[in-house]
Length: 419
Image (cartoon, rainbow, N blue to C red):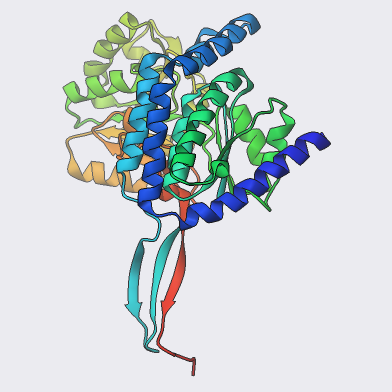
């Protein structure tokens, strides 16, 4: 344990020193590093695939399930996606140094606010090696040093990617320790990382609920997180039913194992008999198991019974709970009772109802006539996201560059003294 602590402290010290260099780096230097990372990844495709093959073979030997192996695999398309993500982050406006809200005070001084990096960000994630590039790019562009601790199942892939990242940093004359990937697979490294307030300013966990709960409980530094993605779509009695059908199918079946997939469908009773049979037929063809409340089963008697626990379950699977509600009031009440405050959507042609929904539903993303699957940094124009936050302080919703910064007050004077 002492060896792990000593190793993590060394990483932390290097990261803290690198964070000062990054805070002083200009936009062109950061973009040069990102572009050089693109070149390094492009020229190292064979090395990345070879390293990933070792992880895939080890994963199969350990009995990892198909979903985990899918997240672990680095296909040519995913490598292309990593490169595209770097290009997108390089093209984004640099938030660092942005000054806003400048105003003269009665004393004659000017007061404003400047956007600055958080400092050192620790990121803990599972399975997906492409997260290594996403996290490094966003932290670098926002002027933060980062310590990345990927899952042990992706250790070879992550180290191969880390070498490309170091090449990019070196090309731009930035410290290679600005992005450090933990080489230890010992779980004690996570415990050390989340309890180093001297070196780490914020932790971002990306993974299953168990991992995030553990980190939230044990961390001694602030955590940007979300636990569950219990997302809802409400089909209003004034909805366009063609839009409603398409949104309800997409929100559930576009991808199952993601946090912005719909887990509960709410339907106004006035349109339940019109829309539910069509949806049930489509879901059946796609292999989705349906569970419904009493009113839902009056329309769809063949489906399963939705228990109280279904309303609080993130399935991450082809399972959907359905509830028929009287009206918008009951829909909002259900969402605010059971939602994990991630993403919720209303389908309606009534402007006033839509406005009321986005005002009263207390979630980090609230939508009108759109699939919950749009709750994503890329879709919001943030570039690759660092994660989703359902917290209310600092960052909320998809966390991109701005979410990895803070603001400090700045004062301009000309010999002013306080009277």
